[in-house]
Image (cartoon, rainbow over all chains, first blue to last red; front, top):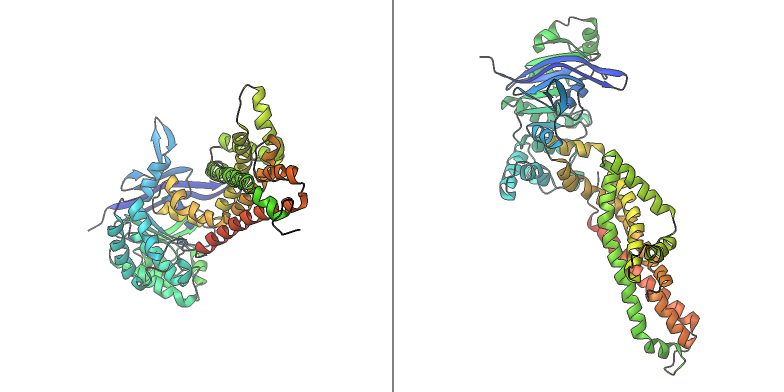
Length: 258
Length: 225
């Protein structure tokens, strides 16, 4: 059975000034899939990820979540940006985990998870506290619920950030190089949580340089090069049969694993 | 200083003048408190406009802040009192002073807030966006609480400037602590003694304010990255 398409990008373009970083991206993420974006720095993968929840605003093309266009609507032949409130409502359906964790430093781990639950989803404090406890438990940090971010290690902070994102029950979770700012010995605990999320059926769009993780967990791998999708397919296809010299040399950098 | 309790000695004259001086002190504290509250509220609005406003509003706020920081407070006070009277607007001296000081302090609070807000790492706004908070919620629950900690020291500074700035109200006839002290001196000629006393009282008020600021800073010291 083929699951329905949850996220579809059609000809997405984005420039920063004169520099075109996305030159027409077409991509699909199906319900329950883990899709990984790989490629060298500057290939546009992070920019694309940020366009999906309007942290960057794409200049052309469409990004559809459940068939609804994100951020822009065409009215009377003109492309119009949606209101800030409408965009915020769309973002509530998409979770994001950042390279730098970005936990709120003035809130405890538990309060970090609760903020969106109470203010965006309208849950009561008591409900939100239960949900936060549940997810902090899932990432192995229930005992740290009252700790402030500065009292947690990098890996723990990133796990709280994942609990904060997933507690909102998003349709889609975005991961932006979430292990890149971590000490090597802390990477495993974060990847383990991501793997568990993937196995629970969460739809995930992942930018990562952890090639072993990408190969083992992804359903679909997208290799981006100079603002375009250069090759896409199953991990076996992309890693086993790199079509371009670019991809071969990119994979070659990972210590000959592939 | 002669500390015996006979007429013409400092202690006797100070006791005689206690009600005038306390009245002056209460006017100083009252005008400072109203100014600080007004300037903080308005300063937050102007500061947010400076940081995030629609560009024509932002330009207006920018002009206001630069203008207010560029002219002496005394000129502002004289203008509010005498200048407005020329246009048929008569403001009681106390309120003219409070309005002028507030207008001045608003500019300072606004500029401090803008700096504080913009020094909060960009990732905080992005994380707040990513959980679906609206713009006003992002400011209220994520940005302002963090900016608040950063703007505490300059805010306390502005408060101290305001307390000292109330001495300028004496020029338009508001009997605050300085003018009250001068009126007492005019009766007993103990000039050095009463200027020292007034100075000590200002020092006490500002010391208390600075302590309060220090307490707040410790209260929010958990805000680290």
